[in-house]
Image (tube, rainbow, N blue to C red; front, side, top):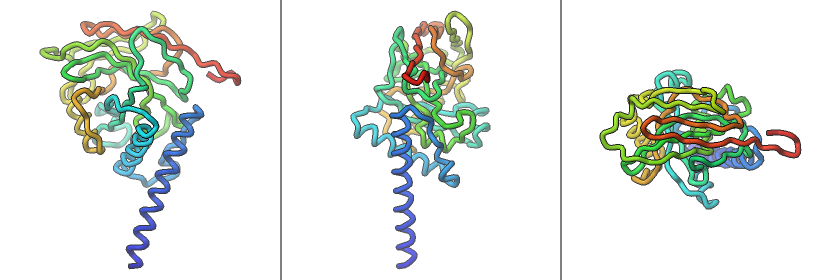
Length: 262
């Protein structure tokens, strides 16, 4: 009986710690201040425990009126996985209120450390350009691990969508994508850079989402791995050229505050 009581106390303590982390994460988002990664307070936390934290965060967002728009992969290349010391990619949840359409404006207000990644999205048998605009919100955006990424929902924030086109018969892996800011080249790459190609990447993200406790629907947006290099998002006019999938343009504006912080 004593051993059972101690185990229950351990579970209760873990649940309480989860709640504290989610509260801190949510408060940091609202205040626009950096997030202390979960491993700073729980260095032995596992990937499975981090996904339970992510699930709890998602439930909080849903209770607050949010809606799941889809799922995105993280660390979807051999080099990225090796760099974070894991042997499989990660998955996070995209929310409907993070969507920004082409030719619109994205404000840096609310971001801690805004970044960009060129990607492809897949939904209902269609493919579309997606420029992922994550918020690398950790107190040190250069040092964090895979567990921290999972617990923080893979830094999901905003994403710009291009026009969707039927997938059928397209050799997506050979698709070359480029990005410019104010007319200057920023990054470029091919869609096949996503782990084992686009088809395999889509199935991997779906499988990871199911293992993490989610239930992907046919209409959900599935976003695969990055194309080219990730970069920091600065104010300016961006044009992503996805070849036969078209161009996606958007403007990023600075966020001026009373303290002068942007």
